Image (cartoon, rainbow over all chains, first blue to last red; front, side, top):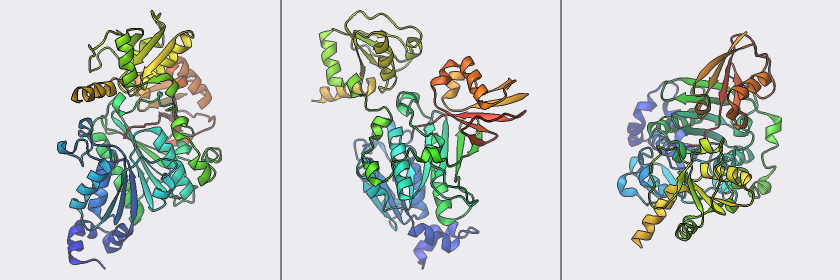
Length: 376
Length: 77
């Protein structure tokens, strides 16, 4: 039964037609896992906790950074350096002490994903990379869990409900029915590379919370087997119908053991360790002066780098015009290490007798490493 | 036979425009081939095709005034 305090907390939604005490009981009995307490996860978590989802789990191994705060609204400036999963849990507990919130302060991997996801009814994907998105999708298919997907890019966002049976009897579609195989990591820019309007993941994450509440309470028409695209600049919404596909289901690991043995980082082309060097190795090469260093970002991209001699050839130009290299090796860098990886591949193909490396984590990571050295 | 084509996400970085119309395109195979000729980068870019708001995975006949959407994967969060 719902107590007086509980009634007052949820009164505005309890009086909704078709929601009522039954809807609230369903929310209080539900278990929802949010993977990624970032731009999508923060607003989703905030509304799910406020609405009274009885059991919420948060998976994130990252800590709060200053550049997160323009969109990750559960955190404040004082939280920089703190665990996102633990901090989010504390904030949600203050918002609604009547619900259970569990922090999983770890990265979701093929080894731990099944054990974590098994404990929940619905999974919300609020991650920021393809390796995690395919891992979560496949785990949800294997465990038969509904997946509420959301993703953003610059001014546009996508929302969908995967692995949930449609009312019309159509087979449940999943993320692989939409995009069967992951793009190479360097093919699609992430938020650090392409930028994102802070309010956009706020809208998309809130839509993920809304879809989750609809799925649990049975109200309305959730985006089952549908992909919605929202454009913040034009306010245009475009929805397409998806179909489950026999062929794509073959791409999903056959059982839990096969899943645990799947290397999602490699599938997504993220495991390119041979071609990447870290900030420390980069510093040694700068000191030795025995390599061509090339910035492949566009000419106007900040931060401008004056700390070491280098040339500037944006990736967009590099594609059509491979420069001649003076030295036996070259290091390329960009903002976060994705475009430079592509540039390294282009240069390697054209200069077989030279060693071409990409600066891992990009110039942003290198600047961070320099600041750490100064503090020491 | 005129068809409308919509580009989403970072595909608009390649095309520089959100939508175009094309004439004399019979099916989706012909469409993707012609688009790759106009915008060579599309050939190596991942996207899903939808005709009149429904995903298609195999070569599909296009009818007059239909709308074809090209939607790329997003990874950001």
